[in-house]
Length: 504
Ligand SMILES: Cc1cc2nc3c(=O)[nH]c(=O)nc-3n(C[C@H](O)[C@H](O)[C@H](O)COP(=O)(O)OP(=O)(O)OC[C@H]3O[C@@H](n4cnc5c(N)ncnc54)[C@H](O)[C@@H]3O)c2cc1C
Image (cartoon, rainbow, N blue to C red):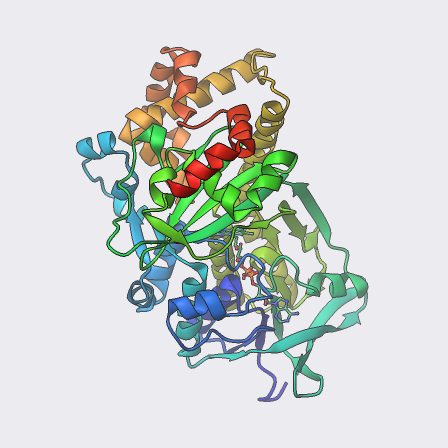
């Protein structure tokens, strides 16, 4: 290995690639990041949002929020980065900001609450800030407009050993980039796994269809218009009407996005929501969204656009104590994915990045590194993946029942009844009791392992007490105001309602 061959090469300058580069540089390793797309344009966040061609990251235009686990890691690990985010207009949304008005009036901060915050801005802004911060680090170099075209490897006995990659730019011939460690941060469609499999690497994959389609439209508040105040629980700006899940992502400088998520078999709604006018019509008929998207409050800045074929995926790079390949590590979406509705992808990406940086710092033997990284990934990320998958399965059952006009029979066994009754009581308790909501938000923000908040006796006893209030009453807590499915379908086919909405 000579000076021209960097010890670590990362494929992909997306969120996980840049987080990995920053985490490794912090441990003193020099890193070269290879990215097929161009760097962000030199101008302001609007230029990045409207003009940056990010074909390599198909989710780029969908809104992103960073959960607390990620926001705190960024703040604690990379001095000055958070200042750069805030200077670019990103917002800190605190636990107090998330409380409905009645709970906010009773709120007294507790130690730990200060850790519960989201970072929000358009993803174009997030990536631009990350990218410029990474470019300033002495140990990181980023080669943009550079496509990886092949994986270089040899075998040692029956063990595949990775030597590097071949890369190509628009105006240079293909060349080899050798490295001691190759990190695949190429995202959901990374080709490196395919090439590894072609070289004989047996990667086992778990793949579960989340059965959803995810739609977004971006808007900007009209000059002089303030963001709507947070509504009470029934009129909140994110919720679930059974057949549609929705949410507002406030961004920087008056920009915000609305997302709407449907089961993929909601054919009529799916067809409708593809049209920007129908997207608006749906939003204007949901009380939690109407104050945001009314024609005298905001104007759209994009059409509505969707993202389908959403799967929960987990690739296994170690099997029965054997590494599929040495010197190869996959992080972020290239290794695992969860349903974007939970907003966990970037957070699991940065956790993964740090697990890898720690492993490479502490261990030099290639096989021991692979096994240790695998073990730490299983310990830290597997519970998040499994919890997300369980939520997907539950949501699929509910959405299908809604489409078929059925009610899920949660009384089929005593266990099913208890689980459903407990879930309803927990929902009700979280609307009335800050301590219960705090526990749920800690899990949501990945500040602790999924479900750990239920080890808190106070939360458990409070929830049990709410169970005594009866299932019917508790089940109401989940319901937000808005048209029932059939009503919404009627609205979408009623021309007069459409015209009224257009002028609303
Ligand atoms: C609709 C939607 C909404 C989401 N919302 C959220 C959210 O709110 N919060 C959250 O945390 N997560 C969210 N996610 C998940 C999040 O987008 C991903 O988990 C995250 O972007 C993964 O980062 P990554 O770096 O692993 O991959 P990516 O961000 O996809 O980056 C991969 C990079 O690799 C590059 N690349 C690929 N192949 C090559 C090659 N051959 N040569 C060179 N470069 C290559 C690509 O150009 C790209 O830059 C959402 C996902 C979707 C689909």
